Image (cartoon, rainbow, N blue to C red):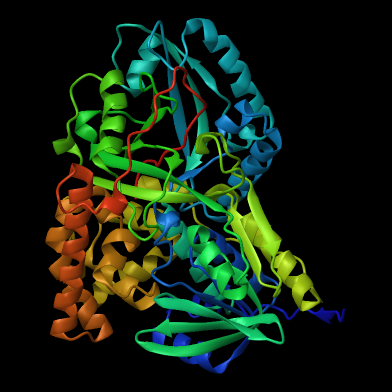
Length: 584
């Protein structure tokens, strides 16, 4: 094997040193993809593919990243939004996974302080009908001590025992009839879609060529080796050539593997998780509260996120279309049942203002509950040398990217170590979370989304003062963020902006639909779209929202492929769960 020295990465801070934002230009990226031969092509723009591309770029490799839809449009924008060790994995005996996950949580908080924040988790202790009663609380506290000792301490707080009054201070609407106190421990949370986008942009700052809306429909073969992919972009088809190929497509990975190896046997077992959103005024909590669902194997979590509370999650087999995944009515009712058991008042389907459904790409046994399956990742090198990564979770994505590129380096016969463990994501270096939070208002809102790059969004207001106006009623996003998304974040459509560049669709579904024409107008002006193209984008977004709502409410428009039966009952509650957090 010939060993070649790794090239030094191109400068990441060129744009920053000029005091200008990093611009992502689709036309330029398309030309380079068609005309250049890369060291490595990464297929899949979720969190794993994004970190693989960043890791490769950090080692000096010439990298291309293609995504068939939008960055984070699959599982990576529909996760539990937790950056965590996984309390449940301790109960399963997988302490090593927890230890490593907590180390990676620490790295995320250090490298992306504007995006990854501490989140308190509250477990109420009840005399009956709880996750555990007072007799079991002592044993559970021992588990929390283990969590703290294997790495939870890095977050700056150890778990706490709470009195009844302290529990009710955090969750005043919690039913107090049988309340005996509580336990609180600490984990991390992040807006998953923005985190992925930031990783992609950091890779681009290091020289990676990235493109969304680029579907790989064939893996190129040169003398029995994977040598790139044929992609379709904006109606054009061309070959992207590379010396190594990474398949990081999650639940779609079996299909991509089959392009390179016709004898490939499916490996992925999709597990479905859903979340619903209700107004904060209906629950009024200031943290994540973990609640029991009577007769069910899964705990539910209720997490404040701005003016909303997110309820999640489920974990069950999924056999429908991987391209059409939504929360169904039985799943919604499953989560509402848990909340209504724990909290005063009565949540109904009419209170649900948003929902998401996503698929975990689990790898392993085909029998048994998905809840009990390992979240460990799996990396394999196929017959043609294509490196495929599956499984894993958001928290360990950086390390997964490192291990993937270790395999790529073996395929290439090159050496070069990963540099991502201490690599700040764009907007993170020099960010002062306390100072930004203290500033309040628009400055705090932009700071928590863009970090030190917030100034580039604010600068747009000098061009046009009307860009300071809100774009979605009741949400903090302003029009300047739509313009910035088009110029610097490769947003192509109304859906890209409302579903992922902002999280308006999740937290205010109907208000986001009302804002679609204005978002289309702003995008059209930036991207040079025709009136017909804008109208089509708006119509597509409204149709997608109607379909999501129809599936959620069980209306006739819901497709049979999207329907899924209610989770099976179980006599005993199982381990912890993950949930989204404070703010999108």
